[in-house]
Image (cartoon, rainbow, N blue to C red; front, side):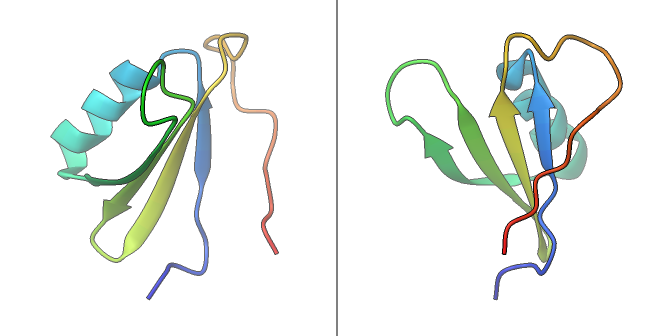
Length: 71
């Protein structure tokens, strides 16, 4: 059963953040786009929760400023 809330974290370094969450929380990769070439999106499963990571080179290290809502 999918989670009711799925945070999506926008990052300038998706590979680094992926290593962080898989190492820290033992997250399992459930989805990745595209299947070849540089990653744009990775879906992770942590227990019964989902987290999404999205690549955006312009994201930098500033505090998060946007939230996406999926209906």
